[in-house]
Length: 62
Image (cartoon, rainbow, N blue to C red; front, side, top):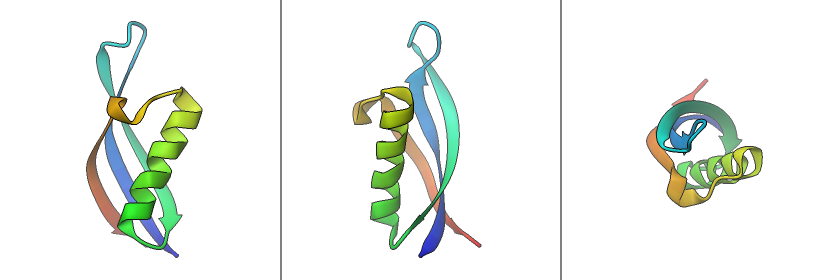
């Protein structure tokens, strides 16, 4: 498994009109699965749909 750091933004805040930044590190077999895992985590933790999440950067970390 490779660790991926994924940075991006999600629409949230008190009114739901501001974009808030996030950074997550997940272990996955490849970049595509890592991105899908972050969509799933953000959806379950914050109740967000994929359309409200923007992925800005994906990189491997040691």
